[in-house]
Length: 356
Ligand code: NAD
Ligand code: IPM
Ligand code: MN
Image 1 (cartoon, helix red, strand yellow):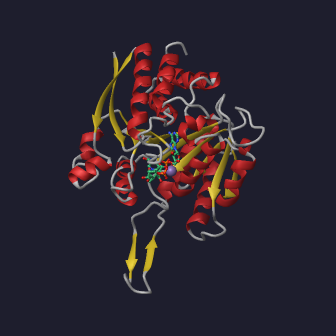
Image 2: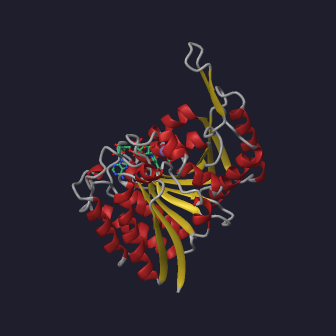
């Protein structure tokens, strides 16, 4: 029997509520398609762990997780207990960087039965992929505070962009564009950010020469954000730096009705170290504990994990399952306009996997 070893980290808040639904659905898919998911749960990368141990991760986290085929992650962050820059930098961002998961794939799709906020848009009108650089850029720990406690107090934080780092994400994005519609959009800000962003544009132009059949356009991030709302149908593959990709990957799903459905695949394409699959959303302290979180982001991330593991049919069954449940409109969480619980929606999708 094909067996995959999955590290499961639920994290904080609604991470602990959507994770069981993700596992329920994936378990059903494994049964149906004849493979085994050997899961092992870890309690680190959570505020609870931090309270007990004074750190977010055990010292040997890298060795502990390295041997898994993939990491299935919920959400981390509980700002009342641990400041966000500590909880995130010392957990999720360590995974992304330590495992060199330089590709962050974030599909954006208007799903059947989901009322989006944009007038006149039907499923099919919004269906694009944000390819986010995931290991460098604006997310850096280089910088510092000077003249602390004086009127001259000054903080500096550097953006780091390397030729290798930019080229590898661009190549991946161009290849995605080849497989999809042949169109690539680059998010830039080379009018205002005068060193790193012109360099990004330069690398895009050079990579474009290796992919002459791909139609490339670029937008400054400000107008790109506006065009996501006004003309989401223009986009197919959107490549962006770490911070711009972060922003676009909440904005895109918001244009499809809810960020609760959005998945995120943090991929190390070499396969030498594990990739990590998680929803785009965070721990949502405002709704945590109520049992009303939408589990589809976690479930869809699970489908991306199955696809990555080579179980394409099972992945397809999972996405068809949540699409059919959404289309029927009978089991919707509050963010989708309904009153179903997280568990009810997860169970409905798990059931649909059997027939999808
Ligand atoms: P968030 O994504 O947790 O929540 C934003 C808003 O969206 C909230 O109103 C929330 O209720 C709603 N929402 C999010 N997911 C939902 C779902 N599945 N179903 C229904 N509604 C949902 O963002 P935030 O409030 O900025 O962050 C909360 C905490 O999570 C912070 O500690 C933050 O740093 C962390 N965070 C973690 C991740 C991650 O683990 N990858 C991602 C984003 C934020
Ligand atoms: C995401 C999150 C993280 C990010 C935060 C929590 C550090 O917003 O996965 O989109 O900025 O990458
Ligand atoms: Mn984000």
